[in-house]
Image (cartoon, rainbow, N blue to C red):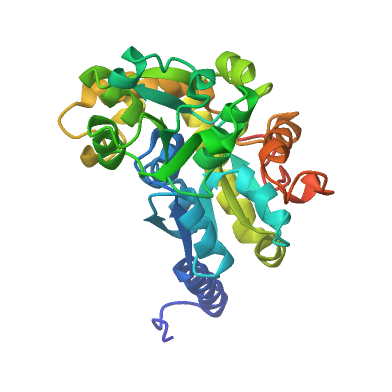
Length: 342
């Protein structure tokens, strides 16, 4: 690098140091971190796109690329394969994967509850399907986003808790959004678990009703026996150990977003979202977001008692987890989130 003749020696030294620091920062920022989101336009995963929109990734010196998969289980597979560095998906995958010998940990938690609901079709409800207990002996088809997904785990647990054995129903992967809505309309599923804004769209059209609500703490505790921390950013433990600086910046960026959400209205949050997230019905999107605000954490930290509650649910339906010694301390950490979030 050449310096103008009028720069004195000391100034040249300072200028060179500043230039080198800038180059080093640019080089670091250019290292992409790919985060796979299990359905990027779902309100439960809204913090991913919102963090990008607020500019927090860039402010932290990160070059984050957000990608989307329709189901969390697909995103999980990408992480295990090393194709992505992080996943925005349900915390319960960290427990499930530990039972399979994989160490994954949530480093920022967005939701205290699943933010989902079991929607029963209006037709099936009229025929007597009004609770999970009504599925006993009926061989209903129940929709989930994907087999092995969190909606799969939760559906099985709700059925078992209601005394309905797995032989009495069939799980069908139908994704979310338009594919879920089509499955309800076409009677390919009699009920299914989905998230906002799909829930509000189905209710508005009159094609379905809420059978089990997991969008707030009160109803979630009633249905599952405890809170169920869900949407989170999780990474491989080995990656976090080897990239502490990046992990800290990611966790801090998301923690700042959760604080921002806690101090802004649904309408203000919606204004930050891409138009294709709400299409021609922004009012419905704001309504769905308003109903979802209570599910979010305000600091990105794991809620006390949450991991134990999730483990209890999974152990009830998954043989690989039941009776196994799961080390919950390896499935999440609050260590990367600063005490004072600004």
